[in-house]
Length: 131
Image (cartoon, rainbow, N blue to C red; front, side, top):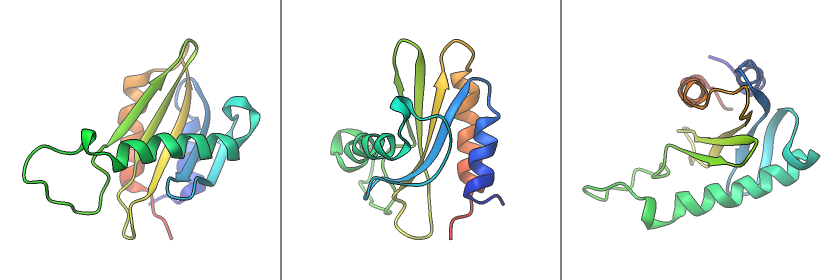
């Protein structure tokens, strides 16, 4: 079971990976970073990505359909934001505490494989040990 550093290094081995971070979406703080950051600053990127994640996690438009049970986990599994030259993949983690962290992978569009990255990030998130 990998820790934060091992998980982020594994994410950087994905084709097209430019940078990765583990972010707390309630505070906007990066708990770990590796590689480049969009705009050159990991802390600013973490804070901005956290705003986006918080919006998706806390608003009912993205809630699960069904019984409406709240188990403390965000209603979304992951988010994909694309621009002309890259993808940003945010993968929410289930944790033993309050599940307020996500993995953020910045992936080059030209040489990255979004489908593969989404699958592998989900596998990494399931194995990641926090604490």
